[in-house]
Length: 77
Image 1: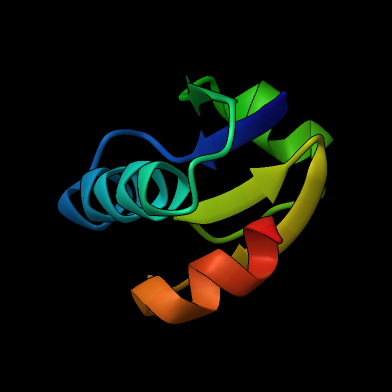
Image 2: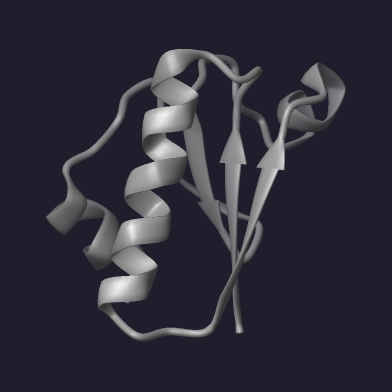
């Protein structure tokens, strides 16, 4: 089971990234848990200074932008 973490305070871009990550995981038929990390100290513990960010199993894959669906699928593969 993959742990997909959305790092951000709940802004529109953060919500869009969460939607796309959820869609990508469903389309790939992978078991996953989607977690929104909204606490700024927790976000900074990842080394992320700009949100939104996407982490998979604790590893930050992208920060500061919302990637395309296909790019998210590559990050989850």
